[in-house]
Structure formats: structure tokens, C-alpha cells
Amino acid sequence: MKNEDSTATDLLEAALSAAHAAETVLARAPRSQRADALRRVAVALHENRTELVAVADAETGLGPTRLDGEITRTAFQLDVFATMLEERAPEGIVIDHADAEWPPSPRPDLRRRLRPLGVVAMFAAGNFPFAFSVVGGDTASALAAGCPVIVKVHSGHPRLSRRVGALACAAIADAGLPEGTLGLIEGREAGRALVLDDRVEAVAFTGSTSGGRALFDLACGRPRPIPFFGELGSVNPVFVTMRAAREDGERIWKELAGSFTLGAGQFCTKPGIVFAPRTADSASAVASALSADASWRMLDQRIADGFAHRIEEMTRRADVETIVRGTVDGLVATPTLLRTDIKAFLADPAGLSEESFGPTTLLVEYDSEDQLLAAAGQFVGELTATLQAFPDDSIAPALIDALEPVAGRLLWNQWPTGVTVTGAMQHGGPYPASTSGRDTSVGMAALDRFLRPVAYQNFPASLLPVELRD
Image 1 (cartoon, rainbow, N blue to C red):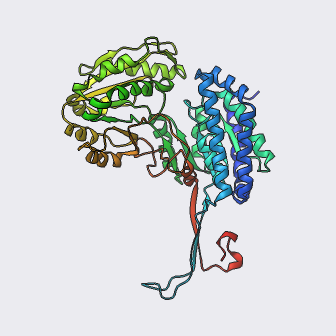
Image 2: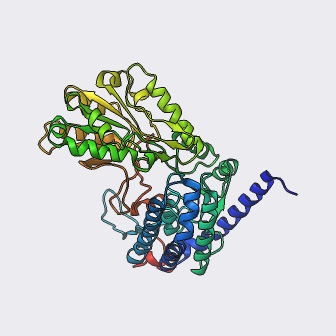
Image 3: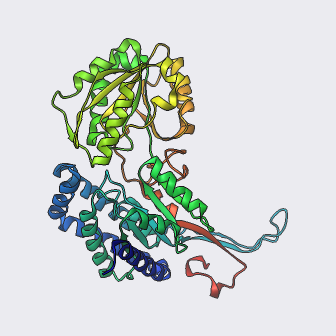
């Protein structure tokens, strides 16, 4: 009888061999066929919704309402990429005809298009078991680009992953795409081996900074390095101006309480640090907005233990005041609200702005709006940065200028939790928010990660790809 390690090795090799064999076939498949496959996967999610929600809830405890909505979102993003393939080509075609008068020297005939990268390794996330897992945004965008995908299943929802994988593979086969278009593997060591295998051309990852950085280093350290598109972590700072706190504080503090506890605070876009005027009494207002009996089940014991450790670490600090002290009992957590001041933050910005994955946020009280600029200058890479302000606040233009270089998405009088699947969405930012700040893992532009340009110079028309011919 084979041991567990040898079985995992065999499954990995089978997935890699099938994906590699499917690579050329899938790249040449008509866009309409890829679109059909994506739509069939979406239909399979809808048709098996009741079963999938039950399995997902048993493994994650996220609740039927949340999970049902996540299935709807996941199916929608599959349909969005299908529509994109049907309505416009993502090949990025550019044709420059020969020009003898082109300065400083004659230009040859050049024709450029984008081609699929090849096999993509995708590491599923634990906090979104549908939308960022087996057939989530990374998989949908890679398949739309024409790349086979091998998913490293998340250990937090393996039964759900296997079931979704089986449904998706059947739907893809029904569309006529080759075996190996989508594959699944399990286990940490298998995931490492996947990144290192020379048949893999790119990696997509959503998860912790430490885990993502380890895999990023593996991908870059290969004899032939490959792109690693990792979304790692973010504290998502919020800046509340004095006027906003004075005139709109009731809304702001109530919405903040809802935002940092949404999904048990297990969103990568959770507002983890909030700069508020000392005079606003924001701490008591936010504390009052928290439900007295609020509690949530965390995703797994590792996350619950990590959250408990981080809360213990923060509440022990002499420069941090505990306004609401939450608890972690097994997997169940209650909210924690912390407060410090701007001088303490500026003295230790790294320690106070470390991500806390769970239902907590840190209020940083300031005295002068100029201190907001000093605070903004301490951040280097965030998924989001939020302004709660009025258009004629004098600090607003300078604050926007300070935040734009360090955040992928800037928000005005809204909250960062939640992302929408659309063309203008940016879900990524400078490191450590992501390993590729020019890319997004959400929205139609997510497909661009898995394409590379190829130019054809002076080719006879008969040998050019059809889409590059005049």
C-alpha cells in the first residue's frame, strides 16, 4: 500500500501532466468555447447551491446567508469573464505596418498580440470558500485567458473543494475542453512542489504575508523564475477629518463598527486602523455601536489562535488602551476595540499597524490634521486607504496625494470591506499588500496577469495568426 506522501506525489504528477498536455489545446480553443465552459461552471454552482452551502457551512461556519451570497457572486464573475470573451478579444492586438519614413530609421512590419502564459498554480483562500477558492476569480480569469489551472486546495474546506472541483471539471468537459484544464491537489508539500515544477508558468495566491512571501521566494528562486501574483495582507487605514467627525460622526462610527466586524473581521480589506480626532469621542461611539452579544465563529483553530495571540500582544502594550476587550473561546471570538494616540503610532508604526485577522480595530487619536499626513507617510503598501471627509476639507488634496502611492484603491466616505467584480476594480497594491502592485486579482483586468505579449516582425500573411492578418 502506498503511503500518503507517495499518493500526493502521484496525484501532483497526474495533475501536472494533464495540465501540460492541455496547454496548447486550451490556448488555441475558440473564445466562445472557453466562454461556454465558464458559463457551464456557473450553472453547476447554481444547480447545486443547497448542497454546496451545507458543505461549506459545516467546514467554515460562515453561515448559509453569507455562503449563498458568495455562490451568487462566484457564478456572476464566471459569467462576467464569459461575456468578456464573447464581446471582445483579450488578445491586445496592435498592428504597425512597415513605414519607410519612420524616424529615425525605417520601421518593419510589426504585429503584436497577447498569448496565454501556460499552466497556472492557484492557491485557494480560506476566508472565501467560493469566490477565492477552486473556481473563484483567479481560476476564472486564468481559464478565460486560456491557461490550464491547478488549484492547491485550502485545508480549511477540503470537502467543499473536492465537490466544487468535480462539478467544475464535469462542466468543463461538457464544453469540450481537454482533460487537465482544471486540476486539484492537496497538502502543503505538494503546493511547494507545484510552485517549483518547471511546467508551471505562473502562480496566483491569496493568503497570509508569511505564507505568500515563502512561495514568492520559491517562484523567484527557481532556475527559471516565474511570475507570482500574490495578495498578501493589508491593514487598510482610514482617515477621518475633524469636520467629518464633527458633522457626520454618528454615521461614521456606526458604519465602522459594522465594517471591522463583518465576516468576523476575516476580510483582507477590513479597516484595521482608524485615525480620528481626539475630540470626537470615537471610542465610546464605536463601542456603543457594537452589539453586546456579538460573537462569530472563526474559520479554523489556527486563525483563532493567531487572533488571540495578536490581541494579547496588543493589550499588553503600555501605549494601547483597551476599550472593549473581546474573547476567543475555541473558535468563537467577540470584538475587541483598541485605542492609542498619534505620538505612539509615529513612534512605532510597524508594531501598531500589523494586520490583525479578526474582529478588532485600532483607533489612533490625533490633535491636528497635519498629523494625518505624518501618519499617511508611514504606510508603504496597502490594498485600500479610506478618507471620511468633506470635499472642501483643506487637508483632503494633500492626504490623497500622500495615499495614492501606497494604496491600490482609495475610498471616499465608504468602507473597504467587499469588492465588486467590474472593469475598474483594483484589488492589489504595493508590497506587502501584493507582490505585483500593477495587477489586480478582482475584476476583468485580473485576466491580464495570465497573458504575455508576442510580436511578429515581417511575417508573410499566410503564416501570421488569423487575428493579426489585415
